[in-house]
Image 1 (cartoon, rainbow, N blue to C red):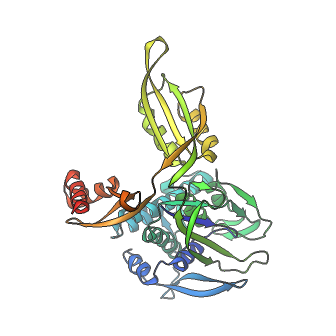
Image 2 (tube, one colour):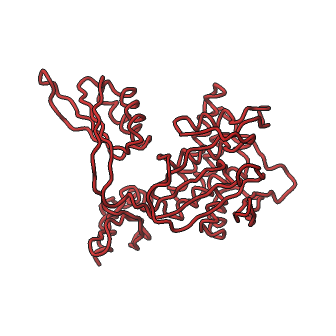
Image 3 (cartoon, rainbow, N blue to C red):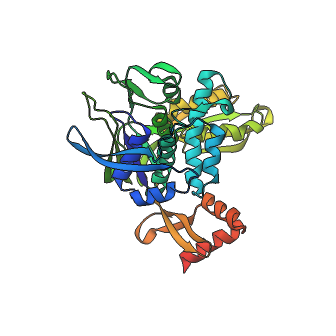
Length: 389
């Protein structure tokens, strides 16, 4: 499984992320071709080689081609429309919109406004649109299936922005980082921007030390300023996850529920998956007094136990949650592509060697079926027939 680790020893921003992806191996030509699918123009994307404390890195900047100011104020709907109207892939559109949605919700809560009333100033500027959509393009290009990150260092001091002088971390940044492990770095600078925080929380579900992996490549993206304490860099580590094969330990959470509105079950499942649950199932059971009920079972990484237990108490009617540690064995998993009559289709590849098997991806097949106005069964059959031929 392709794993991307965010080593945020000096924080994260949109331009640092994009620079690190390019340094990691995302071709500049490909990135620019994909970004050209957006209905925005009058800018140039510049990538420079730079050094931070002796470490070579890529620094990205977006420059307007005209003398007109490019920091145009846009609403969330404006940005959503720009992305949706483009010919970018569905996965890239979804990730880009998710990142902007996170920022809009954080700003709305801080300013006590509706999401539709939020005007993006710095974040709505052209360079930030390029940073965010470019990040989504880069992650899609690399075929990333799993993301993890270090704890996030926070700076201190003040920063000037559209709303005036704000404390560091900026309120939107702090809101976006709720639930994320952070620590005070002691550095007087804005280490994490709202864009960086939104990218991080959109992509990453697991925070902690570098997970077991076979490292393939490393990329460094540079920030715009020099820091005295540490090199102002974001380091991305790309590799093949070693935790996706063989034995690993997970936590199982269970609860018997007989008094919950069935309509809430779907929402509860969505919340659990959104916060990193590996699997969620509802099993029909009969409880005391012969009441029909469900046994809710959640499988998660051990570090997610506390967070997901809190969600169970918040979003269901259970008064108690059982938990236990167990071992599971998983097949090695990666993504691949096959050529069918519907074009190139992404697939899952399970196992390895002679035991390897190719499995259609539901969401990919669904997207193609809707786009080509074909039945889902036809798309599945096309993939399976290609594999068998």
